Image 1 (cartoon, rainbow, N blue to C red):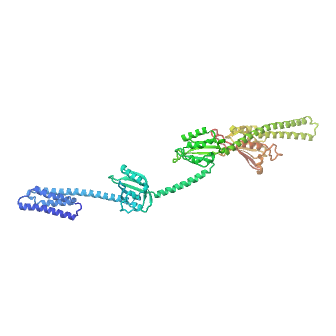
Image 2: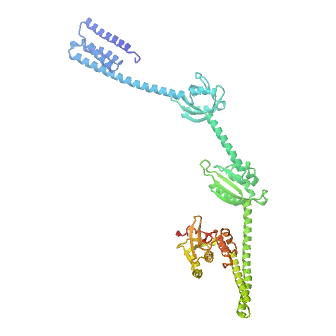
Image 3: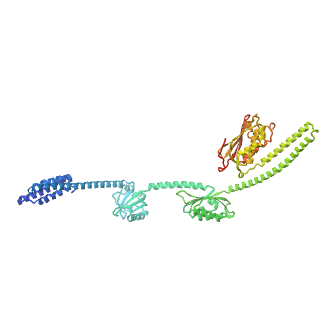
Length: 615
């Protein structure tokens, strides 16, 4: 009935009402009696209900009004109240039925619109999907497939395909099993297979399937994996190329390397393992790490302890930073010394694995042994030299002292018998003897300067300078020297006696080589920030020419031996003291204006260091 046009509905209603009104009129005309109100009501209400069902609210109201007009003459004889009541009832009934019909039609229209949109949307997704979509039954027959399936497989869309026609023969059983699981469990994913197109092109695919409503069919979404497999192939080739490059590079190293995965199996060993241990590396790959270890460790000394250390590290994922092992002489392999290291791999991808290294340190150990022997020989030589210097010093000083004493006796006892020239000769001999004795003392002092850094202690430089100033008090007073010393000094690591001697030499040297009426000497320091403090002794003396500024640190080097007294050993001793403290000494000078000696001494460790820094 919903498919009738408005004109058809109007004709039907006219016919129905005409028949009903005609029958009522004929009955009243031939029977010559009054029609019952009930009969009229029923006769007119039936077409009203039928007609209102074909109309909306406005049509129902119009039909009710028409029905009321049609019944008014037939019910007039029953009084005014009956036809008026019929009129009201007809209008209400027509309007109500029309409103209900209109509401039902609106809902039907909305439902149909939603359905149409959904169907159009699903159809659009189905046809325009970039993946193949198949509706299949339990036997694997395709009930429907989209445009992408037609494009890739090439079969006509009107053709009904079965699974055996397009699935690779080697994959047919796998796809059938997946289809059975779909109907049993509702869905499957990540099913790898190969399809064959009408042109015999093999297409690798990945299938995901879901059981459709009604359990009569399944929806398969098939992804073409050709591009993905090509990318995977290229990536595998790239990884292999770089892996081979790395492996070839590691094979050239003079270290044996073994890589163990998270399953504690050897996954790779380089060629050096064969050179070091005489074992075929292919026999190590793919087996348990400890089994592989036992296949080559037999050539080493003390293997029981080494095996226990390695087993504990592998079992508990511990790190071994250094373990020295040696090849046995009777092992048949070249005698070597190895440093073994084992490092757990901590990256997310390979966590649980480890890398073992055997580093050949044979040459290093040989050099260490040679250095140790040379050090021992040097120590013995130094001891012998020191003993010799003491003996020579004693043997040289004693004759010199005797010579000087007898010269003094001659000057005292035979003064009247000697002429002026004779007395002068004796005086020269005495002075030369004294100078020779000082030279011997300086040589002995220089040879005895040998300091061990382990014996260094914190030294307060301020206290050292105080002692040096007291020792030089007479010299400073006689020469009227203005000695300016900074108020605060840091602590250094060293030998207090030698550092005192160092400042004593530099200050006395500044006094000696000063031709000014009022000599000025400044002593200070600065922090150079390199683990050392730099100290300086500055004067306003005669200065040193640039060409002599390196030479003056040599033994017995004097720039003006006739004008200034001394042996020329002071600066050589000073340099030796600074060198033994792992420091440096240098000079800056300008002739006629003065000289500044700089030297560096190591700082005290942080826990002992003085923070005060006066400049």
